[in-house]
Length: 138
Image (cartoon, rainbow, N blue to C red; front, side, top):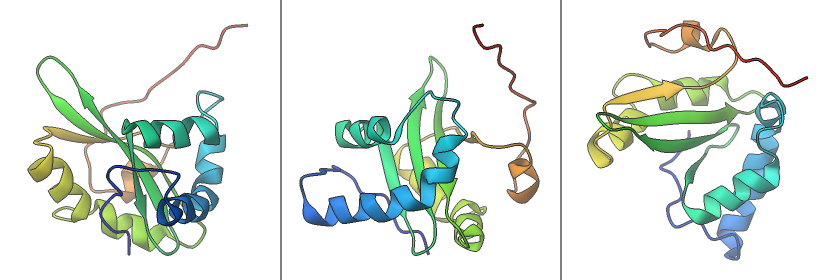
């Protein structure tokens, strides 16, 4: 089961360092799909800066960020993964689940968005907002 995120992440603390070591193993495949926008060290740095939040389970982990816009705030599930951890992820993101309570009650977010591979919207009870496309510099 994925637990509440580690707040005040400090990689110099042993328990946080061990959590990162386990979680990066869960997330390595998802990080590879980011097309080079972030490497593991970037995510670790952003966790340490408090920009991202680490959620850890036994077989899966997730990374969230709070995005603030002029009229809405959004909890974005930035990364999620873990071999054999799909049931943990689905439990974490279900309606009324831990992620919703944390995002809506603690952070007063208006939405939760999920950035991920095609097909996730079919597994998660959410409303697809369309496709995201990108053009890469040659």
